[in-house]
Image 1 (spheres, one colour):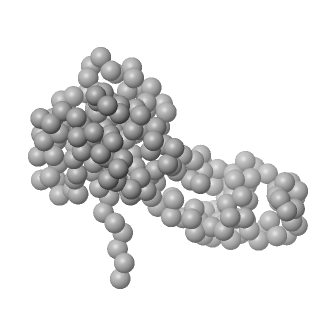
Image 2: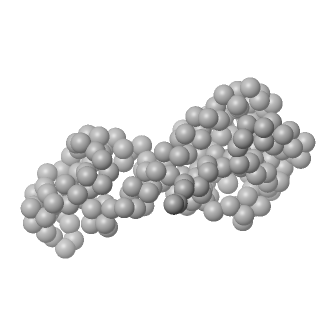
Image 3: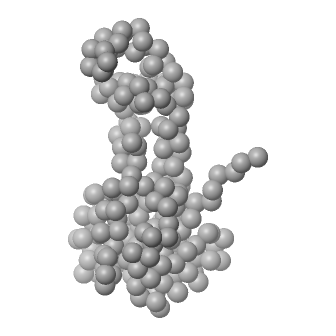
Length: 201
């Protein structure tokens, strides 16, 4: 019987004292936690498709936290990023959230970190589930889903597809994808695709 991989927590900070402190804080929570001294080490060791939360220092000496975040975005990783920032970096952290980071915490507010971590882990699990559902669609069903999410009719979608197909075929694809995604209508699909656009192929 297969089981889902545990959603992991990755602590990436080049300050050894901070990194060790966070690991000591998180290990007793019963989480699968790994620490990395640099963004390069983290990216080299961890599969970007592994569900998890990355507690990521915004400023590091080599590859910055923002650069690591961009690499994860490019990989369409389901991992959520929770930035650690100093007071002077708050505007940068806010901008990162606008670009898709989950949230940020000012060092060394561990109470706030522990409060936000369960939400971040839940979001990581939902992203991974969305990817799995999307992967269960055929390439043509994924094409149709994107058009349906935009509100296009079966007839318009049929003309837009390459190669062109009949509206009846589109109707069949639509019914299949709704069943596989367990969704009821176009609006629900549209909201779902918009929410998880960053991790869907």
